[in-house]
Length: 313
Length: 313
Image (cartoon, rainbow over all chains, first blue to last red; front, side, top):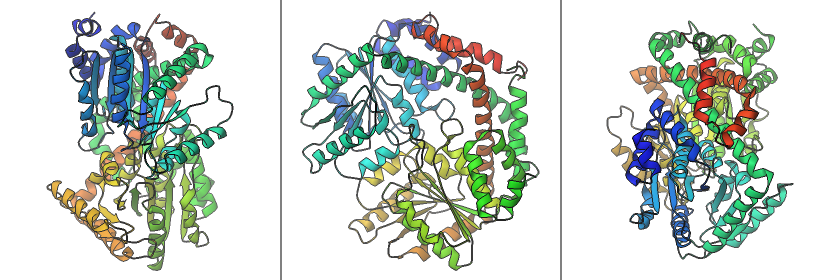
């Protein structure tokens, strides 16, 4: 086994950080490291925390960390920033407040940007969560802004999805549109001291009534992450959902579907890197040909595919 | 040429609608139709209209349609709804107000959901815009909610990107995070009668000062789409941007990069369908093997890749 993987699995935070950096860069080095540690995964409870910007997710995450630490559990955190097509970088912003836990060696916090279009945001984030799982963190929190398809993909990789809502700001519409409502296992209405908090909770419950035949009825909690109110109820709900997964067929089918996504993501990356190689080589002339309509993207793509994909497959 | 493609190119609205439905379903039928009409594309001016939910985009689009119609131009509209992973459906909502133009046969309006993960939202939307272009619409408007990576991808396919902001609601943070700020060519601060509108316009201008070395300085207009105020200035700005593209190297490089994205999107789709075929066949047993950690996704994917990818590539 690679020395870096060994040191990371032994719990050395610096090696874990370097391991995740290798994953962010992607490529064969990343896949090889992941292959070596994969058998150690599957023990952590992975919790996705999502919601609109300004919903107070980071404050909630900070409270959850404190709560899990009090009960003796170690906690890994992945904070995901939507990618900017220009900077590609990670905006830390509010997440700095998580640094309350920076000196606690039972807590590991990592902020991640996107790996670009090839591997996708969800691939790298999910792998980073697997690394923290393999390295022995009992709870892995993934915090993301829940407003786009790639964020939905990130969050679907969690065992338990916690959706944070706030009163006002047309938040409901936005969250519903992104389709996160349907995949949330635990709801939190944060900033419960604000006007309209009870109304949001009620709206969510009404909407949940419309989603028929679910064996798990997602609980809805009012909370004020800033003051610490409601945190115990939330962790209890999350624990209850974990038990539900352990006791029902849903847990297994969710695990298998997660694994299916893992394999597909790796396949996608592998094929893309092959195609990029073939395509980079010839694209300048071809683009100009398409621009003057001497050929078209469909004919060009089909030719490239024919060369890269094995005819037997 | 396919009869459907012929009737669509001749301007029959029902055939255009059916053509776009074929595209939404994807697959080889879709690619073949697109291949047949591609040489007729490249004449429309494609304008992406984006901004947060509630920014008044649909009202603005309706005003723009009226304005272009007054100057004798035909207008095609694609209204994009973020996909729900569960319903996959399109939420019409506010867009019904566009039905003001439903009886005008110089206007074609189409609402689109997602084609799912395979083709992606951006692929189908961009192709639908190409269809309207090929079918002779002078202006093609693409309206989308600008909050996620896939929406950024949709909007990047436009010749001119118009970002609609409104005072309040922490809108600025959200839009900046999604990286849309950097790709907007024309800014509209809508609901200009509200407090803080001038401040938003000023903030945008300050931010634009920070983006150095741009040959096109994106103009910022105050507007009230509801009352029709500011619409003439917006259409003038859009026209000026079109001229800028026609007169500078930026126009050509933008066209080429759009074409590059087209080819890559088609390649992606082709690859996915090959992978799905290879993978569906054997996945049930393999997933269970991975679940009990008898193997891992990296080893499984690498075996599959070896069979899918041609050894010569």
